[in-house]
Image 1: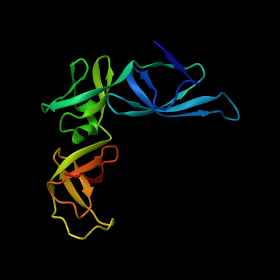
Image 2: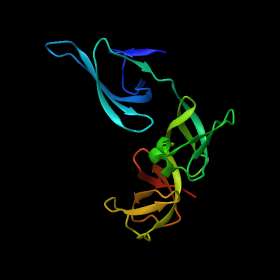
Image 3: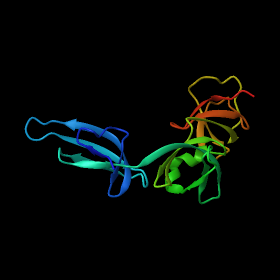
Image 4: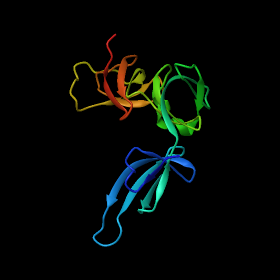
Length: 189
């Protein structure tokens, strides 16, 4: 298996640390005025979400994790697991609560997601950048109030709550940015 040394590590690289896959969230090379140069990396466990800080000397190296990102279609949730299918082979995989994280609140069915696999097991799911969802509950819209200053909470069909402008009504279809959880706009009929 490939290894990554002091000069090879970079942000976004997936490595093995304590036999678990981790992603490097930040890497900075430090050359002090006196002493040996080192790299400080901040890593996040892909299974648990826990973060850690590590210092690498020139003699240290990490194994590169055998992690693959693939496109899969979200099928359904049975309450305990979320089921995904590879569109080309129709092979199905299931993800647990740890692998889904916050992604589950944006999925209603048939969305294309980027799924991270480690040893054939789903360890992370990334929702599409934008989803279109129907508002199931919100206060009545106020006609003529189009200023950007105000907002109100709206519950979507997946259970997620987002802030929407005052003029948006219940049962409307809206577009939401899943990376920030913010309202983008209304979807035309």
